[in-house]
Image (cartoon, rainbow, N blue to C red; front, side):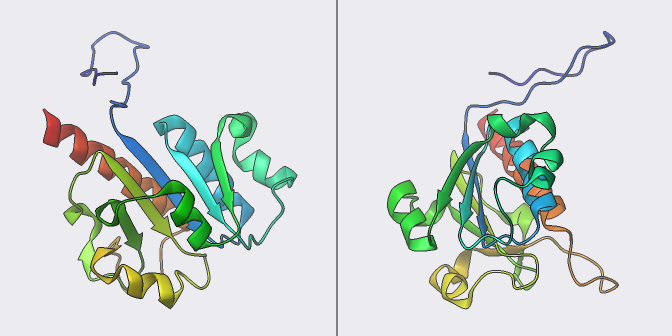
Length: 174
């Protein structure tokens, strides 16, 4: 699908260019609202959602489904027992993995555009485990914020980063 420029016609929507592959990976997410919101964003962008156990909620939770509204059944969802099981099955290349931490040394807008990207986020209270951060130390990015808050909401950060990858990839191709 190609990018449609703005139109002066009322009611006409912009459509995303979906000629690339995106994956959001949530490692041990704790809050069902965040996962539900991220799931809805994944549907809207054609992105696959990967959840790495343990989860801090039940996937049968009505709150999770409510956060995803009536779209939850459309989420392209994969659930993994651990990060290694995810790596073995999804088989991302090392240059396709991008980690996000409030302590990342590089801003998210410096990510190189890739056709296929795995955007990896940690839990709301603990972030990513040190073992994952060390394994991909050169691929750790942050969404810069002021010192007035500890961090952004997980679903906000995931949305910011995901849309930036779509924007930068599209502009790198056109």
